[in-house]
Amino acid sequence: MKEEDILNKVITRYPALETCRLDIQNACNMIIDCYSNNGKLLACGNGGSCSDADHIVGELMKSFERKRPIEPVLEENLKNIAGERGYYIAGKLQNALPAISLNAHSALYSAIANDIDASLAFAQQVLGYGNKGDVLIGITTSGNSQNVIDAAITARALGLKVIGLTGQTGGRLKEYCDITIRVPATNTADVQEFHLPVYHTICKVVEYRFFQ
Image (cartoon, rainbow, N blue to C red; front, side, top):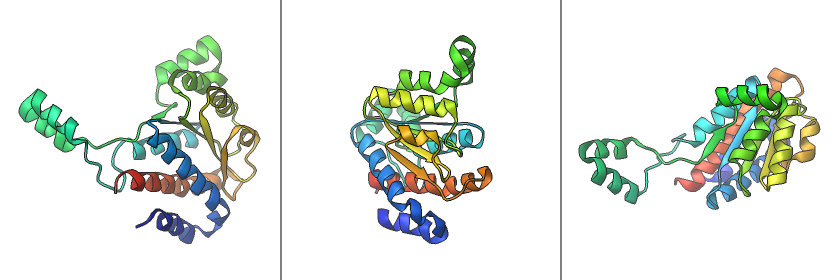
């Protein structure tokens, strides 16, 4: 299946997403460029969007739909270092596309909220993890979540690319995004139902590019 076929498939299943086709494709290309230059992806959101951020990272950090064998040099090193156990590890590990959910570090999140400002919990992590050329995906159904907006502002200041995944209006977040994927809905639950096929498609296309 070609990358274009992956996108066509999701549009066939969700025709309303035709309005987002170009933005989805551009987001795929942006993330592919990031990984081609040894970058990483950061993701954040609140509530259901927090779960979506974790979900995206889960699809990127291990095999999603395609086999991802590790590099032969790593395989050989594992075997040389640990013998039988090294053989086992080498046979189980899957190549990763580096990604971090900024929601996943509860102790750090609570420390930032207590010592700095809860609205800056994502921004502080962008400062710590982000490098020029990395990509931040900010997920907010309204487009107006302040902590996601602050993360986007910080990301832009550091030279990261920013992809917004929002509802139909894009909210204030769109002002700070290189690409805003605005799905055709405004009700929170409806927006979230569109977000899943969008980011699944992005993960599939990116994985296909690196693991054919």
